Image (cartoon, rainbow, N blue to C red; front, side, top):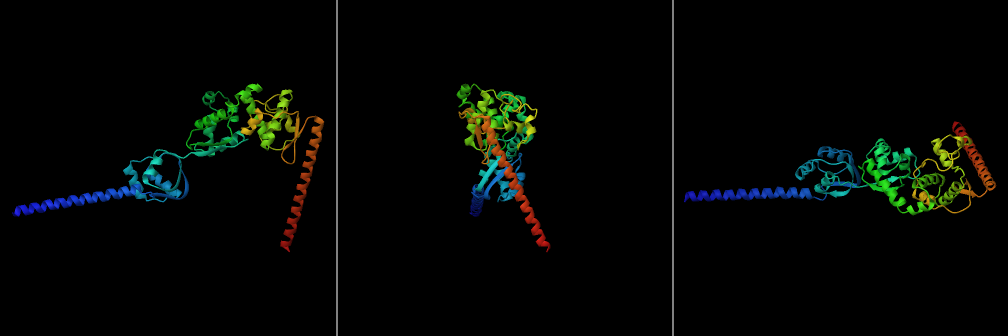
Length: 366
């Protein structure tokens, strides 16, 4: 009887212990589940662009997160990463806005599910400028980009020479991944050039009897010559008239390219001995002088039909076109007179400003 009583006590104690263990386990399990799935375990107070430059572990990740202003619990994040099995986080550009569970946040970085960057390629840039501009927006350096742009294997894959590649960097905004290699980015730009220019306008190249590289070269000159898109077809027509009549192109932008800088030219500049100086050579220069915009490429492909052979700048930033040299000389004198008056006006303004400054200084001394 007594033995049975003690046995009953032992069984009861065992059951109580089991129940306590199960409750404790369930409490811990559900507590951890709640913490792992809490929708604001990791927060940002405003939209955040987060960059990882090289693979990092969880502790290195937390240092970067703190520097960028993430709101989170270090111990919990460390614990969550271990529970979920994420220990290495990949380079990339990641966008965050609001709150995230540990699973959502850590999985995105561990799998490298980065958000694309809007890569803008500017129109009319110099070779140096376009390389610098692209590299600044990507993880790779300008030197790495230059190496790819001059690599014979890469150029050979696309059947291009270096100067031809430069002219095909079609200005636009492209969605690419920040960690993309220079080769991958250039592949994308060249594919876009083929898709938007070569493929749809192949028939026009046949009609003109010109190669895509000749069109790109002419378009690059138009790009630097024209300030406004609406004027580009007229300028293109003038250049085509000169080419078809076997005149020298005599395009000022090619002299700027030969000089290595853009700006007002002086008389001596037109005599620069350079293969791109169209005041000295016949026909088109060896390659493009810049990367032309879509509007310039369209203008080169579809020039305005007219009889103009000459043009000169106007105060409005456009051009005055002429059919004869006599007409051109008259319009050139008008432009020269305007420039002279502008110089006189600016000199007078500077003189007046200097006098007012001297008067103000004298009043301060008094």
